[in-house]
Image 1 (cartoon, helix red, strand yellow):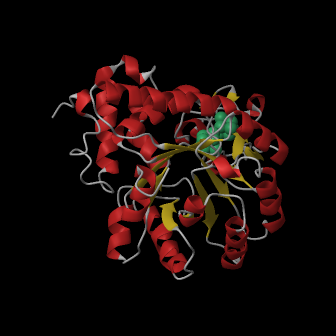
Image 2: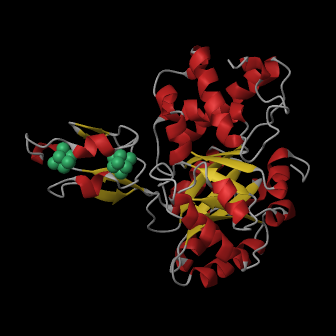
Length: 350
Ligand code: SF4
Ligand code: SF4
């Protein structure tokens, strides 16, 4: 991949769109549909959890979408397939749990109603669906819901990624996790030369600047290609997994990005955490120069009714509807997307 290829071009022109599938979201049918829809809508990157079954499923959905487009001579280019990893405790890598036999029969089940991905049933939490947003825990009147970490060992991750290659990695890190970051980075040594992109995601917390500068030095000294080092992505994580809660959540990420801009990190700044349809305009109005935006819960909610059915390739009308909704979001970063011929085959209803 060189600087003229679409993902790098998008980063350098500020039109990078990343779909965040969820660092611990393992619902294969939903991920298949999400990847299909957002690939067709023009995403540059699909970021999913480091689970071999998820990698295989999403790679297949991307291939399928590319096949649909090329069948009609459309050439959208494939998004990068990225997996998210963590170097220590992180809210993106956890699952809810509760012993359902202790639920009082008179409970009106607020947990079930608040879950944005229908991961809770009367039997408990469907672990594959839960992406750790944490919304269910505070609404339980008897405090029955707890969060457990969802982690893999560094050795397992290195072995798994060698067997299931991906285009890109994102590492979620925190200040205080320097030893964990070094350990993880060392465990990835084997796959670094083959990567097309590396991103680092971090929240606004005390000591984060010093930590990120250390991380940056280590990454720049590694075996990554020079192109990848020039295109490092720094994901500023505003309010994790909150983009579908309220419009105001986008402001936190933009304010944090404005701050990080002053650190002069090499590469590109990307928003995430609370992003929604106000993020792009907000960044522009605040004078924050971003390379793009990662959308998670907001992107998922936009197409929620369509993705929870069967494989969308078997339901052209629903697929078409979902792509059109997704494109409305993608177009905020890529206003010329309709002219790029991303989905002429879909014959979208007007
Ligand atoms: S509300 Fe969030 S944390 Fe709770 S089960 Fe649903 S996805 Fe998991
Ligand atoms: S809110 Fe708490 S008590 Fe009620 S069903 Fe959910 S987990 Fe059980």
